[in-house]
Amino acid sequence: MDIIQIVGLGLIATFLVIVVKEQKPVFAFTITVFTGTLIFLYLIGEIQHIIQMLESLAARANVELVYVETVLKIIGIAYIAEFGAQIVRDAGQGAIASKIELAGKLLILTMAIPILTLIIETVLKLLPS
Image (cartoon, rainbow, N blue to C red; front, top):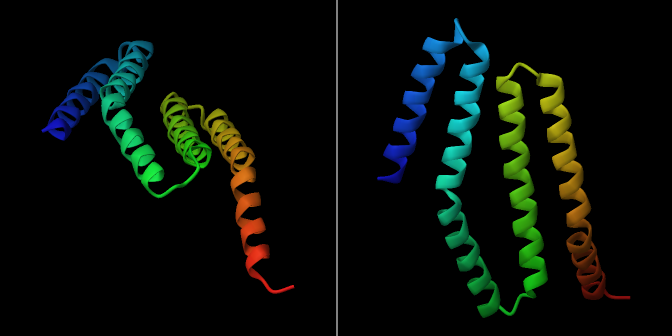
């Protein structure tokens, strides 16, 4: 049922943006940003539920929580960068949107280094000397 509400909100906002865009483009953009933010805030409860499930699974699998947290942060960076880039792209600023995406990718790479190091060390331990 949640998706019906989200799609309904999106369709209403889209209709409003189309109607208002000709007369007040700034107001149309404000509607777009507000709608995107509202949808994102609506999903925070679901995101918290997913995080709790993943932490529970990690605890049962004896995986260090620091790695799970790092992966969750990486996923968060990806979603936030994509959300921000799409908003900026909707405003007609494709070049800035590309820079936001680049920044997100670099931050993800930076956060992934400890996990990549662990994987490489594990593979090296498995190989015969």
